Length: 157
Image 1 (tube, rainbow, N blue to C red):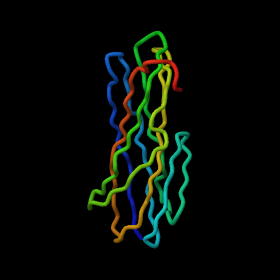
Image 2: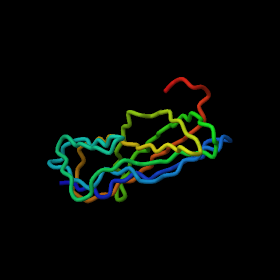
Image 3: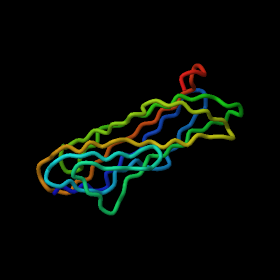
């Protein structure tokens, strides 16, 4: 049985450009604490609404998945449309070189923001857990990068 502890993606934010658009990280994306039975495979999906599911031979323990949460804001009084890009890193184990990929179906989204109305986005993803040998506990870490830039036009979302 292989245990995975504190599988969490750290958050990286980028200032947009000269448009004074800011991104603040509020919460890490996490896939919880779980183990995989019988050296098989499975997947953990965390949706943007906070719901989650598992398939395959994955059993969750006491820490459960959560979405990453970012706030995108500006000091502009008039509403502006912002293009938000979401990029996941590969997760790397703290004790070995095992890696896992995070799949995210939403890579670009558009939001409208103003000084009075910042946008809060929740970022999920799917962790595909492939068979691995060994039974050691492992903590995997990676990053979620969110880049926000002013959209050049009002169509596209």
